[in-house]
Length: 383
Image (cartoon, rainbow, N blue to C red):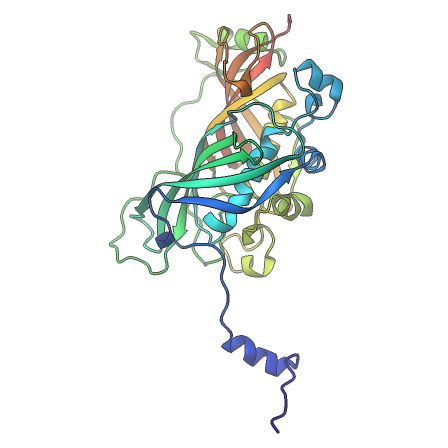
């Protein structure tokens, strides 16, 4: 009679691991075809606890998302789900299907909230459409995929969050190539940097151009303050640009816990063993945590009334445990008379005016780690 093996014997188990196949997760570039629709499973229920945890850890303290009286003043029946948490949860649900294999983050844009405030208890269902696939001229082991992702209310089917993002995705088999110019976009970012395959982080692109002679800081956080600051800068070599005092040092909660709570299974944020051999050498912060911290810093110096959308987001380098995320803001333009008609942003021009910002997150070495533009309705002083 053949002796049964002891599978837990160290030598026997090592031999078993050598012979066993690994059941892999995620998809390669070749698995994506233009026009494909991917329905991501599972979904996620947006809870008040999850929302408040995300907001507290990323320093988003707008009282309308915490207190019923402040929510009622904005026209909400109860404190709603914060748009940053909604975006992060929508992306987190997609990671296993779209980007768990790793790859460089090339950008995200056209972020919108089409159907109005979203409240706790909403069951989120997410789908992505493959908008475009292309070969990489600089990295033969990758292709480039752009998806349009929509988060829906499972009960009504209404789209509650949408955006486009572009990633490099590993190929099963590298293409033969003679090299070429790099793709448009910045280096691999917080969500996809250090993907564990040994590839090197792309260098940050060289900057250029002369900065304005004068930087102007608004006197306050109301819409009129931003208008006045831009008028002061008009016809001068000046910019309305300022940095925010607060910083948030990355810890176990922000690096590992928050992404996992959004079902973001990317190994970059929780598998220290794999990441030890990556370009970063360690696990890194989820890009939407970095983004939300930067926007939280910015919102602490303004009177945000509604979030309207975001565009042109890039993640420029790794954010690792122990790094501190700070923020810098440039005011691009204001719109005094815009009456937003869609339900998500519906507000009276008597309540608020529209401001478009550029936000840049940076670390303790003053290196940019995130940048993007954001459009928000800012409360008027004389309501």
